[in-house]
Image 1 (cartoon, helix red, strand yellow):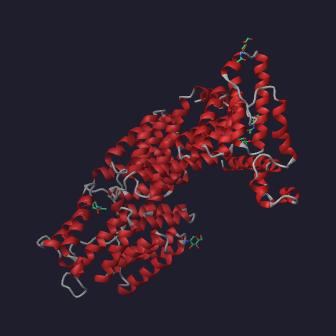
Image 2: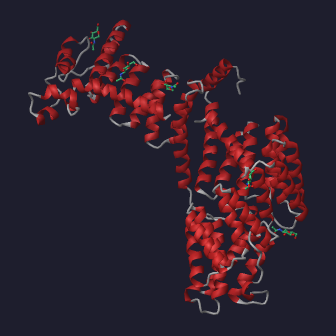
Length: 616
Ligand SMILES: *[C@@H]1O[C@H](CO)[C@@H](O)[C@H](O)[C@H]1NC(C)=O
Ligand SMILES: *[C@@H]1O[C@H](CO)[C@@H](O)[C@H](O)[C@H]1NC(C)=O
Ligand SMILES: *[C@@H]1O[C@H](CO)[C@@H](O)[C@H](O)[C@H]1NC(C)=O
Ligand SMILES: *[C@@H]1O[C@H](CO)[C@@H](O)[C@H](O)[C@H]1NC(C)=O
Ligand SMILES: *[C@@H]1O[C@H](CO)[C@@H](O)[C@H](O)[C@H]1NC(C)=O
């Protein structure tokens, strides 16, 4: 919601993690589609010998000319096609192995026990060939019988692979997995089987095992197989979504730093409609909630949220109409209720509450809240309408212009954003965020000197505000001036420490840690220390946790990283953020599992040696 929070550093961090994940984990539509295409080709070859495939127009036409369509389509194996005759009718006579009345192999353990090694080899080969013919004729059950017989003579990974292809054609994924697993045991780099097993695992929604196989494929492909990586990414996403979907949906408020910057951009109000310390009942709840909001502490917002809900209930808003004495304060309580719901990412409830506020007794801020809800779901035209309505009610309401500026900023219209932030600054000179956004726009527009000046001006006006140095630091870091950036983050952290309220919270610590850990590997311990402090200072900051998780990964403390990623996912409010944090956790788990696999670890070392990199 606040564009400040999504500025430079944060985004860079997410990219860094994504890159990290894609080295070890990853995905391959292309490969899947080529695989599917080759099976298609097999099918076509089969169509020429199989009557059941006579539906395929071009090729079957010639054959179909003399036969009645119905019988031709449904006729079993005794077909008129010459190839089919060769495959089925003639071969039983020539087999070197015993067959039953249906022409299927009849091989018992005693028979096998009597064979010489050479005979076993010959029989197995013959059985495999016949199995292949049945497969081409799409007679999968028969083909399975041949491969099964071949396997009695020789545990050849190819036979397992061949039989798994039959099961795949029959959509019998459990057996595909059994046979490919046997084949892979015998030949770990049997990539055809690894891919086939991955496909079956994905189909039965066993995404973790599908990911393991796909990761193995990326390793066998020397980490250069983009198509497999794409499939891996897709499966990782499905897997993470499934995990997030299975968790109970909990609505919770974000970190106080986020809420503080949300309310901080509005004009502070302490006794709207005359509610005060002496008020009673619903008015008192509203008043106390505002006190908590204005205090801006780490824990006060949860209390404010509860108090606002109590106020809405006590006003008995269903019974009120716009002429009621309490219509004014009640609609303010509804507005704040909408704001908290919005902060919890519950846009639907927020929209309902704000509509009730507007129906009861709107004020400009009611429309501003609705505009925010609309902008959040990208309904920009509606949002602009809301801002217009608010302005019609009170053209001097400062709340309008800051958020209107924010809307233009987010949609990339920097000139209009600038005009509105200027107006917001004039109407509410206490809004530090308007100053910061103006400086950021100047920086984005390429005037670094001028941006420096604007930050300096803001620093003079808001001498104790940690916001100014924090966001100035982000700009400096974006520019690549790490040292100067760290200095600003230090100032911001010190200011935050000395304040009774919560403004930027752990942000300067997280920002500094990110800067120094990227600057040099030697400062990892220092970065870790900063992030541990950040997590303590703001236990609700998913950003602090996700950043610490990254450091833990670099230090090879994989289990800690997994826990932190999972906690970040729980803390995150939007579905996308939850899925992303979960996917980091799951990719890390996969990395751990790969490292425990000796064959794959050896292969990774080999790939690394070949590419001249140091093995990890
Ligand atoms: C196996 O060979 C023995 C001796 O050569 C023979 O007596 C027996 O019948 C054979 N068994 C089968 C099942 O062919
Ligand atoms: C059986 O394996 C062989 C060797 O890999 C292959 O050429 C053939 O296409 C396979 N047949 C089936 C049905 O998978
Ligand atoms: C990707 O991997 C698959 C399976 O290991 C392989 O068949 C395919 O040729 C590879 N593609 C590229 C572009 O290397
Ligand atoms: C960006 O810079 C150009 C020229 O340097 C100027 O005309 C324009 O007004 C600036 N826009 C903003 C939003 O500062
Ligand atoms: C935090 O507290 C300081 C000092 O009491 C005050 O000047 C400042 O406005 C407060 N900031 C916020 C965001 O509430």
